[in-house]
Image 1 (cartoon, rainbow, N blue to C red):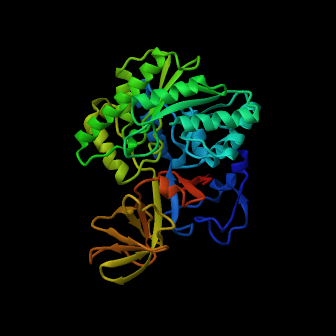
Image 2: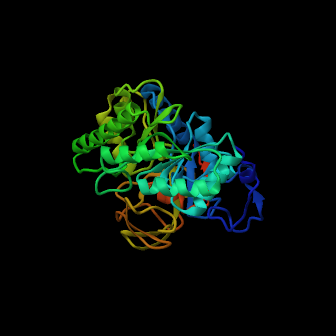
Image 3: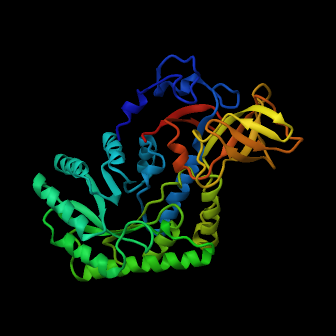
Length: 430
C-alpha cells in the first residue's frame, strides 16, 4: 500500500488532539514533537491507540487463525484507516472487507488490491465505478454480495450496457429471517445462485452470511442459533457445488464478525469441505477491541472455545479517550471535557479507567467507583465518591464500548507507547 499521501498530510490546531498554536506540519513529523499525553502536552479530549496493545491483539489473532485454518478479511469500516489496513495486510490478512462504495474508493486510493464488499450493489454510479476499476486493473480482486434475482438482473443489465470486460465476482448472501439482507432459506439462495451462474457478466465465487445479527440473552442458545445458521450456509455451499454453479477457481465461504468468529472458523473447518474452499472470517474490532461490550462478548468466546483459552493472554483494549476534569460543581459530581462528539454511546457509556495529575509525577492511577452517567455534546457527567481525588485540570482515561462509533469521531488518533509518549498518528477517512 502507498501511504505517502497520509504521511505528508498536514496537521494543525484544527485537528482534535493537536495544540491550537501549532503551525501546519506533516503527519510524519508527529513523533518528533515529543508530546506526552500524561504531561498534558496536547489539548483534551484526545483519542489514543496504544501501540503495544495493537501488536498484542494482532499476534493473538494470528495464532487463532493458524490454529483454526481460517483466513482473515477484517472489516475496514471499524477504523476506516488505511494505515491500520496496511498493518493488518502486512500481518497476513487475506484482504479488507468494506461496506460502501465510498469505503471502497478510500481503500483503492491507497492501494488495497483485494476487497470484499459485504453488501449488495444497486446504484448505477457504484456499478459504473466498479466496472471501470475492474477493467482498468487486472490485479484487482473484488467481490460483492447478491441476495435476490432482482439484484442479479440489475447488475447484469447495467454491466452489459457498460460493456464490462471482466466478470464481477459475487457471493450469494444467506440471511436470517426478520434481520438484515440475505436470502431466506436454502431454496431462495439456490435460485439466486443459479441466476448468477446463468449471467454473462457475473461469476459465482462463494457463499456469505453474517451471523452477528443473531442474539439471545442466553449465550448457550445464541450459540445454537449461530450453529443452525452456519449449517444452512453449508447446505447452500454443498448444493451449489453439486450443481456446478461456482465459477472456476477457489470457493469462498465467509462469515464471522467480531462476536462469533470462533464458531464460524470451527464450524466450517469441521465440515471438511476440501482444500479448494477458503474459509474467511471478517472480524473488524479485534485489533483495538474495547473496554465493555466486546470485552464481555470475548469472555463468552473464551468460555465456549477451549482452544482460544490456550492461545495465551487474550484481546485487550487498545483504544482510549483521554479527557480532563472541567469542573467539580458538587462533591459527588465531576464534569469532563468529553461528550457525544468524542466517544461512542450506542452500546455503553464510556468507562473511567485511570487518572493522573499533569503537574505531578504523571503515573496513571486506577479509578474505582467512578461512573459516567450521561453525555452531552461536549461534556460527560461523572458520578464520583465524595473522597474522589479528582480535581479541576486532572486527566482521566476512559475506555469505550464499540470502537466503530468512536473511530468515526476522530479524523486523527494519536499512537502512543507504554509511557503515553506520542510516536505517530492514524488518519481516518469516514
